[in-house]
Length: 101
Image 1 (cartoon, one colour):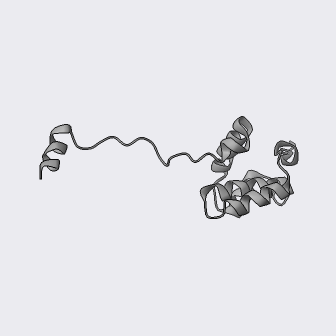
Image 2 (cartoon, helix red, strand yellow):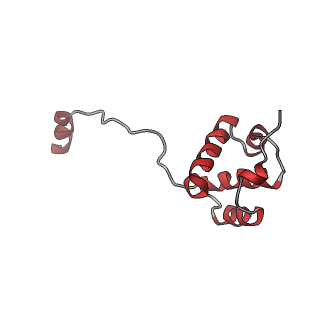
Image 3 (cartoon, one colour):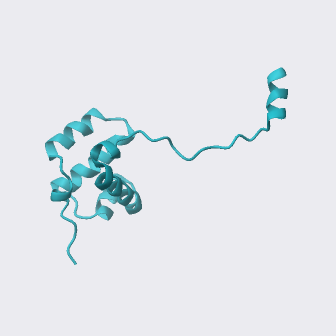
């Protein structure tokens, strides 16, 4: 079984990915760009190796790469909110009572 040719799949150059990584230092996107750079440069061959190197699970890397393939770099770097939608735990009556205090 042949592995994925990440050098062909990832369209951006290693140099451009390095620039983006530096621009996004300290953000959640930094590690995503780093993963792309490691794969594109051939420093790692598989998502499992990449995940071990950057401290994320193979499953997370698979989700990132699915997003990258579907939406490109822009889609991968979109700031999405953490978690799902939280339901309000107080009913309207309880909330109104607290606001009166």
